[in-house]
Image 1 (spheres, one colour):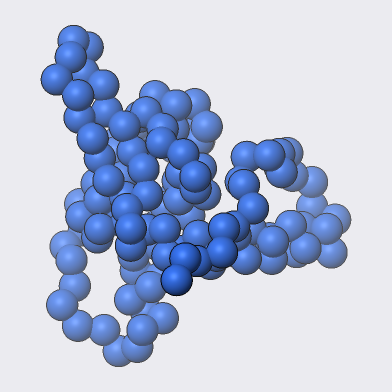
Image 2 (tube, rainbow, N blue to C red):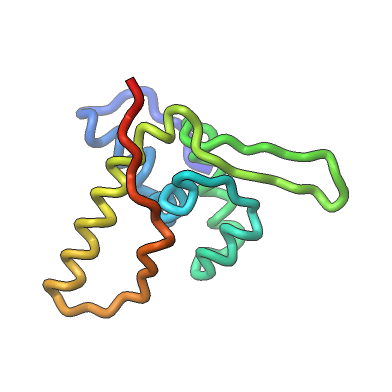
Length: 126
C-alpha cells in the first residue's frame, strides 16, 4: 500500500493522488447512493485482481473517502459505503462520468455503459 503523503505542490495533485488510482473512480461511482459488499464490488469490477481491489479499497478507507464495516459473522461480511467526505466527491465523479460518455461518443469508442449503474448526483445539503 502506498504511503500517505504529507506535502503537495498543488490541490489538484492531492485530489488525483486520493482518487486517481486505477480503480478508485470506478469504486466510488459504484458506491454512490449505496452500500456494497466486497464480492459485489468484485463482480462489478471483474478486471481488477482481488489484490488490486483490496489495495484500492484500503487506500480509499485510509484517506477517509469510504467506510468499511466488518460484521462478526462466519463467513466474514464486509460492506463498503461512501463516508461523509466521500459523498462530497459525488458531483465530481458524476461530471467525470458525463465527460467520459461525451468523449467516447466523439471518438466513436464503444462502451458497455449502463446508465442505471451510476445514479444522478444529489444536490449538496445546506
